[in-house]
Length: 285
Image (cartoon, rainbow, N blue to C red):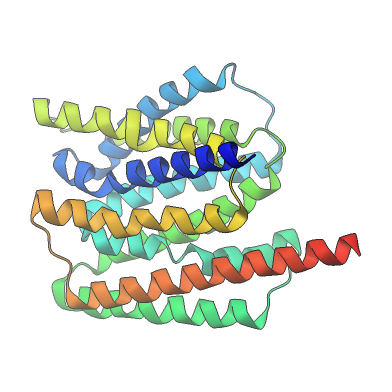
């Protein structure tokens, strides 16, 4: 069990590192955002299919919800990264716990605690700092796309939770197929260059495809708390790679806002784990 847990943690760290490469690779590919998102998704779908096996053509309403919200998440995130800083794009997406908590009470009938509300306000306060900064820099549209990607990410988390015992990797596969189909009309203006081809292959194979394969294996062996906290490596590393390789330096507002968002997500993850343990002990009693 201990070996499996260590393996799970190692895979989860690998997942977060691969996810964190999104910002620098997306900015390195010169194509428009929708083209990058669509081609990245079809490559990722092929990678996932190699590990998943035969596609399942049974579509329940939670699976359809997961597919649509996943496609929206990957499309909106790429477009946001093209239109604003990598730091703003990834950290605004990490406001997803706000929407997950709201949707969880509605769709999953999960209880929201006062501690959840406190964490949501912390995350919301950090989010405000991003928009203050973007109003000055003219990146408000990119931040709005990033915020919407957080909303769709929240929907995806809830639908995937409903689908947790029904091969959720199928939802990821079909979500990538849907994302590709949506972007087909916007594929014009692609200039084939070696750096762009290398970048899109790295995005599809490793940053999106292999990362979700690793995550699906890791999630079976780690605790709920570890599954929440370890991926927070992603929003920390993402802007660092872009700063080092693309010379895009986050603003002071983005740094402070990002720290607040990460603290809010971390604290909520800890309280969620605590609540789960209490519920489990109550059930056993």
